[in-house]
Length: 260
Ligand SMILES: NC(=O)c1ccc[n+]([C@@H]2O[C@H](COP(=O)([O-])OP(=O)(O)OC[C@H]3O[C@@H](n4cnc5c(N)ncnc54)[C@H](OP(=O)(O)O)[C@@H]3O)[C@@H](O)[C@H]2O)c1
Image 1 (cartoon, rainbow, N blue to C red):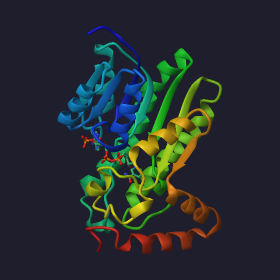
Image 2: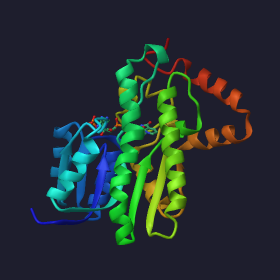
Image 3: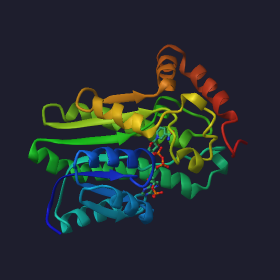
């Protein structure tokens, strides 16, 4: 295969926001590196677009996954100028009832892998004097959320990490953005064990997230997307935190299949 220049690497590309992001970039002719565990879905996506695609089937919660990504990029001679880190999942239910391995997987995927991949991909972008780094966090980053506490904490980690990095990268030509969507119609709710219909008409489409985020990239460090995010941002700014957490607990009490 000839070297691939100006590629966009997308984690979590097999579904939802990652897949929508991949389709948007492919429509502009960008070569893609598609990463997730479900190979059939990645291959179907690669076959549906008219751009070169490198498909990597990897469990990114595994410690050696970022190193394997870099090895694959080197072998295929792929130059990554955009990284969109979407891979993630939630787990709804009483903390003590959650399978410990699942919680640790959530932390490894949302925190460890994001830091590791970012640390490996940034030096080449800095050397070229340009690049784009996007991490998909959540509006949950603003809320300590009972029954979704580990997820909210990981999303908060991503928010703080990228906000700080945005400032560090000022003047380097590398743009960083953290995106905080509200409830979005993807595979997320089913996997998290929450009732995906609870947010009803307030639910947004993954394409909305991608459109808004791409407009914000390079202009500001954080983009909140969706009608529920404005209310949450208001509550978290003006209402005492303990009250916010209590309200959050009320909202999530009957949110899903695993309510205890
Ligand atoms: N949907 C929402 O309501 C919502 C709201 C706010 C934020 N978000 C965030 O948006 C991001 C994308 O989620 P989504 O809504 O698009 O949900 P989704 O449709 O379930 O997509 C999640 C993606 O992550 C990948 N993934 C999960 N575990 C992985 C692992 N161990 N290794 C590699 N890939 C893995 C999945 O691929 P495989 O299963 O094929 O590996 C899939 O491609 C997540 O970070 C989520 O926290 C979602």
